[in-house]
Length: 66
Image 1 (cartoon, rainbow, N blue to C red):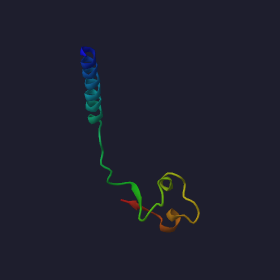
Image 2 (image 1 turned 135 degrees about the horizontal axis):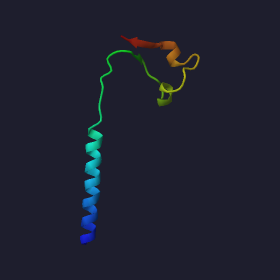
Image 3 (image 1 turned 90 degrees about the horizontal axis):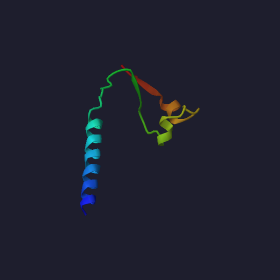
Image 4 (image 1 turned 90 degrees about the vertical axis):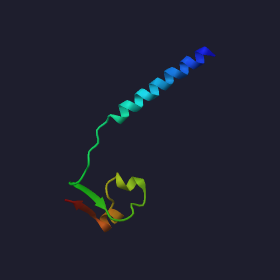
């Protein structure tokens, strides 16, 4: 039983250590030089693959934010 408690403590320390590392990452605010699409993409892959002819991106277009 004592071995299990020690193992749990070690796992807990590792998890807490990883959360401290993750919390230390930097974040930035994007306020300019990005684009958005007004409307529905239709699926997650529409956002990462090139725009197809006649697709929603070609019809609605992508707007620049200044």
